Image (cartoon, rainbow, N blue to C red; front, top):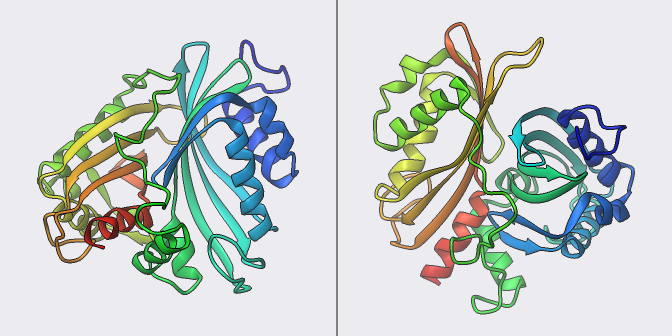
Length: 321
């Protein structure tokens, strides 16, 4: 951990430690220290440049969900120039007790996953890609992702004024230029996703443990080959001609843990097919996804994939009106 505060002994220690300090210790001012002044934070919903915007968003979230906790499940990482690139998986729990972006307070307790890739160097996060399971949040609050997206467009001032989702046109080049590492589990997961996106769904029974535990968007927690087929088939069939791109892949071996991988990827193209997003609209859509996988003696035994379905619906609705 060269050029990092000596209290952080490992990348896992750093990521879990600063997450707790910022959110649960209410050290929001530490974002001035831990987030670079010119950081680029990309989520499917938006692109934010600079730590001042991140501070404002952090305070808004905590004002709406004041008892929010962030439970770190895993940190998958690889070496990067001057530091490391981490892919952090966590579960967030909170009670919706105040008004905010999710509407009037409902008093409901929610739980949802987040996957975030962070480039860290010189004791700071310089670049970030984050996928929050917004579909799980709004579903637990009594809405569906499409309805929430429509309300969001209205609340933000309509189609012309609303915050635009992440696309190649709205993206901003950040500090990190790496592509990960050549760990065999990263390569295996990349080959698997490329096969699925090419329509070879026969790879699921060949490469997944039959009892694989799987987590998918909208808080879906499931198991087995059929569930994997349903998710990946439904996603690909909605965008049958979209270009699938792997932007970052890495694998890791850690003591007392199974070999794991983390991939960040995208689908970019027309909503031209029936599938996970209903009747085709021909809207141009950019889907940013992150996938974590864990391997055992019978193949992929645990998997987590997140996309923000509210951001997908927002793009579709902006096209259809």
